[in-house]
Each structure stands twice: as C-alpha cells, then as structure tokens.
Length: 168
Image (cartoon, rainbow, N blue to C red; front, side, top):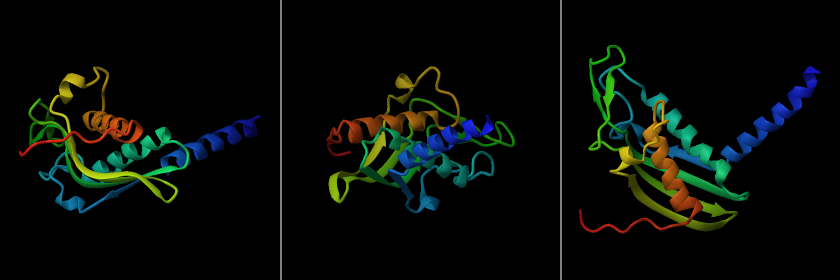
C-alpha cells in the first residue's frame, strides 16, 4: 500500500521540477542591488531574498507552453517599503506605503528551441501596487510576487510590449 503512494508523488515532483526548469534566473551583481537585504543587521539576508525571488520567478514555468524557455537576468531589486531599524528588534520592521513600491530591473529572453520570440530590458514597477494588492496577500514578498506575476502575464504570456515612457 505504501508503495502505491510513492509513484504518484515522484511523478508530481518530476512534473513540478520540469516546469520550473523552463525558467532560468540569474542575479547580476546582487551585492549592488538597491534594496535586497537588510544592511542594518536585522531582517532578511541577501541569500534569503534571492532564494525567494528565484522561487517566485521559476514558478512561472508552469504557465509557459511546452518547448518555450524564459531566461531572466535580475539587474536590480528594490523591495516594497523601507526598513526601520530597531523598530522590532532583532528583525527590524519594513514599512510599506504608496510611495515605496517594489521595483525590479530585468533583462529577459523568451525562446522556443533556438528561435527567440521576444527579449528586452526594462524596469518593472507599479506605483498603484497597494490598490491592486490582494487582501489575502500574506507573507514575505507578497507585493513583489504580485508585481512579477503581473509582468510575466502581460509581457510573456500575452506578449504585450512594454509601455513607452517619455523623458523622466
């Protein structure tokens, strides 16, 4: 009886790993990122932040059609909110407001076999992120997960181009 459960569990594990393998994430000079770790000695380490962002982005592989691969270079991370040292010792406190949206700078390539479908480099942010945030969004990196999921859906799944911006 016990062996009957092992085979489906292994198949499910293999399927999840195969889907996640369709997305490759590279972190380019993460030590120079705007805000990916708490530099004040409290809060999450850079290693933890990068691991969670990798898990989020690789999870999008489930939504890619078979045969397509996505390579994402993360060039910068600026997490939602700002750190308030000592407010919740030893972990610190991250205060999120509408003027501190999450922001990523990404370079990406979507391919099918050897054919490049789309590629680009862009800053991904949403100043209205708090208006769109799910009331049920809990946990660390919920705002970042929502922002990256929306970017992936628009740019990769739907194939919509990046919005043109004037001089800043």
